[in-house]
Length: 107
Length: 123
Image 1 (tube, rainbow over the protein chains, first blue to last red):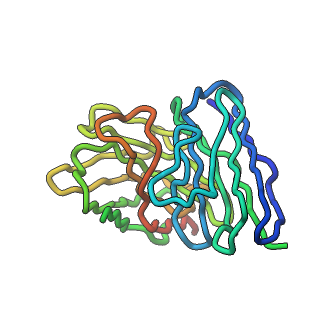
Image 2: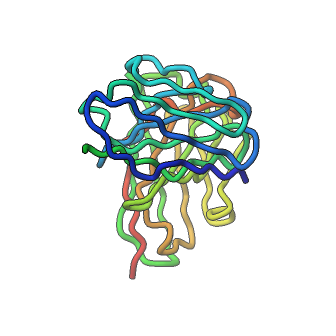
């Protein structure tokens, strides 16, 4: 199984900050990597797929980069609506696996 | 608009069974692989099971293999999860989720999710 490790687990930031979340895979997933945003009591929402493709309707302040085993989700100019938990997921091979999540909190 | 509506959750005793359903609308259900993902309260996401558009390809997490069975009825636009021999660590919200690309079970992210149904396993 491919293990996905996210860092940090918690990130404290202010509105307007640029933030980056890292996801590392225990073996290469090529570019088969997605990022999801989840707010309390809600289902996850797809933000980024294929490591760097922006899902339709997602603001352009979200971007993804990386390939192989190291990936980054970047949010430029953090907005109040962005305070949430973010998960990476590899969909290169089964079983599909998620990172442990990164909670973005308000400073 | 894509809609996925889960039902069938509830409180059940350890060792008993439960059947979850997911009713889909707003897209060509018969063309897409569909999966179940769960989330224990306060924790992260865990893939549970998936089924290809025609039911020919099915996969399970090791944690549920041999106890859970996924199925679909394309005529009814519905997905099911039969859960047997339930354990306390199966307690979670169960989400039905659709892949983004038609046709393929592989290398396809989840682009739409239901609101989830809560399964609680306790005596």
